[in-house]
Image 1: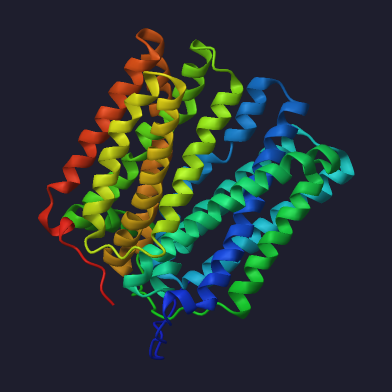
Image 2 (image 1 turned 135 degrees about the vertical axis):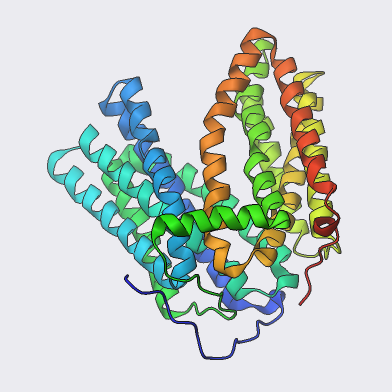
Length: 413
C-alpha cells in the first residue's frame, strides 16, 4: 500500500435504529465467533508450549507475541488512519489465516516444536497490532452516535461469551486434536470474518483520512494531537490506566486471598464468575439505558469500582462475592459508555493512532502493575495491596470528573 485510500464520494447511508440494525448485529456475531477462535488458539498455544518445553521457555512462547505487538502497534495506528479500515482488516485477517494454516501444516508434518510456536506467536502478535486500530474504527463508521453505548454493550457481551465458549472448547480440542486441529478451527473463524468484510460490511459514515507522510512523522503527529486535545488526552490516559488496578486485583489478589483464607480453588472460580456475570448484566443494561451524560456516569462507575476493590481483602466470602459482582457491573457499564465517548469524540483522522497509543499504554504498564501488586502483597499483605490499588484507582478516576467539557458531552444523532 503506497497511497492513502481516496475519500469516498458517495453520500453516507443512514443507519437504521440499533434494535433493527441486522447488519451490525451480524457483525457483532461474526466478531464474537472470531473472539472464540482467539481464545481457542490461546489455550492451544499455551498447552502445547508446556508440553514441548520447560516452564521458562513455555512462558517465553506465550509472551512472544507481546513484544512485536508493542513495536508494531503505533505503526498499525498510522495504517488505520491512512488507509481504508475495512481493507486493512481484510488483509490482517488473511495473514492470520495464512499463519494458522501454515502452523497446522508444519505441525502435522514435523510435530510441535518451540520454533513453530515462536514463529506463530510472533506473527499473530504483529497481525493483531495492525488489525486492532483499524478494527476499532468500525463502530464509528457503522453506528449512529446515540446508539454507540448500545453497540458497546452488545459487542462486549458477545466478546465475553465468545471468549468463554472458545476457552471451554479450546481445552477439549487441543487435548483430542492437538494444536494443528485448534489452528485449523481458528483459521475457519477468520475466513468467516474475511468473507463478511468483503461481501456484506460497507461503512456508512466514512472517516477522514490522514495525510500521507513518513511513518515516524505520522506517529509524532499522533502524540502531538494528543497533547493539543485535552478531552482526547484525558480519555486516552484514563482508558490506559483503568485496568492497572482491577486486573492485578482479580488476577492475583483473589487467588492469594483464597489461598490464605483456605477458600480453595472453587472460590476463585466462583468469584471470577461473579465478575463475568456482573459485567454481562452491566453491558446488557446499556442496550436499553439511554444515558444523558455518558462520560460522567462512566467515570463515576469506575470510582465505585476502585472503592470496591479493597472489599476483596476483608470480611467473609460473601462480601468478596458482592464486591466482585459490583466490579463486574461497573466494568460493563463503564466500558460501553466510555468506549462510546471515545469513538464519538476523537478526530477521525487521528482515530487509529489514538487507539494504538491507548492500547500500547495498557500493554506496557500492565506487566509492571502485576509485578508491583505481587511485590506489595509480599512485603505487606494482600489486603494492603488491594486497598492501595483500589483507592489509587478511585482517586485516578476522579481526575476526569473535573473536566467540565468531558462531563457535559452528550451523544447526539
